[in-house]
Length: 505
Image 1 (tube, one colour):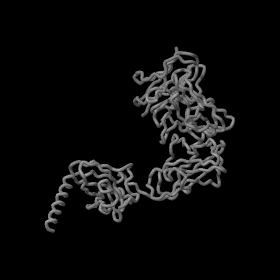
Image 2 (image 1 turned 135 degrees about the vertical axis):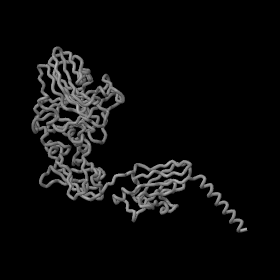
Image 3 (image 1 turned 90 degrees about the vertical axis):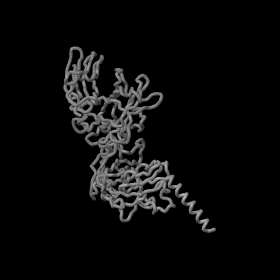
Image 4 (image 1 turned 45 degrees about the horizontal axis):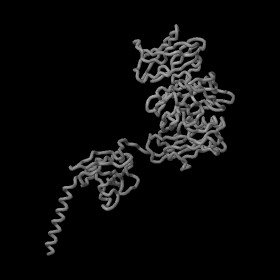
């Protein structure tokens, strides 16, 4: 009787095994660990590679986690493991170092996935963490330094009561770790702050992004302490970690504002901004000149504080209007002093549905940077100053950046003769892909400004209408043109003048 029962059990097991085999296929997983071995992130002599997933209960038991290890039989650093899994099923999985969740599993923005069909499957070899580049790590220090002399001079930062922090990818962009964020004041110069930050097991030549942050004793209306470095168009500063004990980041002024750019008391400067709203009339922005109002939006919190404005994206400190009905909107800002010569901004328009802004992300050059022309430190020979014509953009990156007040525009070039027709040389020249063309009209006249290639073919019409007396500036984009020489011609009545310009891409 016992033998009979044993035979029945054997037949049942054989039948079950046969059924399982018919409903499953083999899937072979393969991962290349060579990069992680060279980086010493994975030690094959003391650590194991596992492949947890939906087919083996992840890193839960049963089955035992030591049955989930992969092997490298031929020593080529490619680890493999074959599992028998159910047909016609999709599984999630990932590669992992260790028998548990010890912080060395893949970080690739989610799990891997495999769709299993009806036949055996050998998966392609992948890099652990999808990382095929060897990043050597090292230890070291980076000394961060910032000069607050301009902010102190114009009265918006108190060197006695206020303090500075450096925040970046190395400290979670916060002051949660004071030893790696709160800066010390230089005992020899109260305007300067520094902090030596240690780095351990960090990739050599790995970018470390950071910004300086003001910690005000009495913030008042300056509620956003993050700097907006002009050199980055408001984006992050960057330094490559070299793995050295005495590495220093570049010296910096807060917001990259030099003391030479201070606007002292009594300057009474005014600056005119202009923007071509033509591109905004198309989808998806659908600007309507009949119903919408255009605004200049300051995006530099320190300058906003110097002007006494409340810092908000919906600030209404400067409205631009279009008296010529040509979609070139104009507005003049009276700069409150003391302050500094730096204008970081974007444009917006408002209607009954709300606000629409030029987009700005968290990358470099999210905002325009422009300056009033200077001929010497703290010297502004042209007042009022007229900025180049901006053009509305739906891009997060603003290409029309200036680097300092001395190269923003040649000062002499901002003073065309008012009593005659005059056409200036375009700026910059050579250019890529855009340039500014300025001209003067002494009396109301039908005016045309056209661009031609070297064969005399007309490639652009910038102006073709009656214009009243005044100075004008037009933004010419050659994004769709090829490298080469072009000519621009101004015609007004009997007056005609042509100048040459060079596009270099």
